[in-house]
Length: 393
Image (cartoon, rainbow, N blue to C red; front, side, top):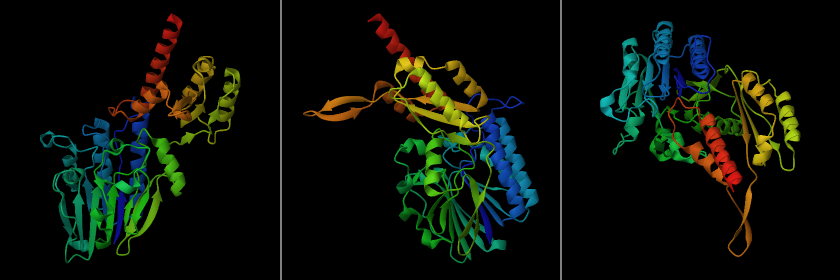
């Protein structure tokens, strides 16, 4: 049996201010396009079972275009693969805090999709001699978790659930950054299953030979740069989904090309440089970008920039960079301050802007807010207050 494993679509995700020709958010359109391309490939690969392992939507109340788009794409799957069941579970992003609120995901049962939103449910597919235990986010955060045990008698036993293994969490992220239920390898007991389809971790990752995260189809987290670094470290070839042959759990990664790139330009170390020299270094990084920054998501970190130097930069040219890119984040970082610790041992502490930046980076935000702009604006306000205080002094 060949199954397809997708997760973390986050349809309805919005970021930055750029709009499409129809007036929609450009990043929301990018995320939708990624799933459309995945569906195109699914119709070519023709799996016998399709698993969507949670966070189909980015929020409990997704946008109307996102609701309609998912309906259209699932309809394509049901028409193009009429004999292939589709199982969809709710992740933390599409699970309401109150059970009385209800979930939009139930809408898709009208298409013949198996939708599991609160309690774990075992679903049998006799034509495939397969049993799927579907465990949504809500079932894993209850006081008593369901027993994760396969069904006797089925030739193929599949577990699909939405949660993050504690031992693969990036140390730079807090637990709130994930939001998913936390799991241990003992919880999974992967050896008893033919395959474990996981959702909730946005980087492609093999937990065991038969237990995998396919990763998200797009960069839908404010910490996209952490994901990029992790993908490079693990030699993950970008975003996509998994095709899995069972028994044996032989996986094939199916890449889904992104509409645009996330480009982390080589950083600039600004210690001792004048504003004009920094302008030249920034221009050199932009000119050397491959691909060019036009319509891409771009970050450039500049270390050791004094407040006065930052004010004297060529801001009209920087605005031109921002106009060219979908988003151009010039991350100016102040010099580190030294202090004396204990009996005189040199140490380091965060400056007030660094402390504020770290706090705002981790603070929970509504999905519609641009975190990069939010952090940048907070640091700018602090800088203005500091400058005004200095002038009054």
